[in-house]
Length: 94
Image (cartoon, rainbow, N blue to C red; front, side):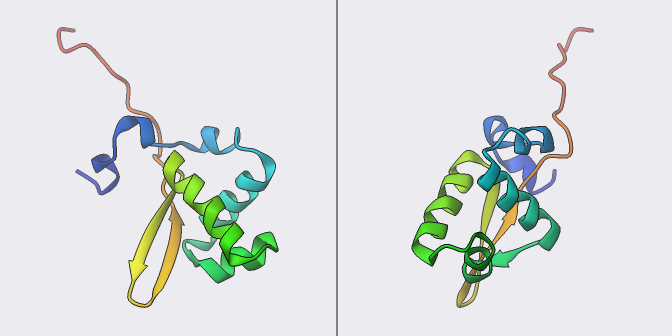
């Protein structure tokens, strides 16, 4: 079982779902996906907003299941959390 499997199915996001996000959120998520992970200040520089506004946007993406918070010592970092593909729900009595 992977770390990702621990999240409920409704919070397991896919790349097609990223593409349905509003432009600003989609840009942030795809940039973060390419970066691997980033600090709040790095994300704020990308979106050209203050850290409080950026923190609120990241919190929304965390609540939606697109972004994961990584607490690494003094600095909080963020990374994208996507499933490679959705698993099919098959009946057990095939």
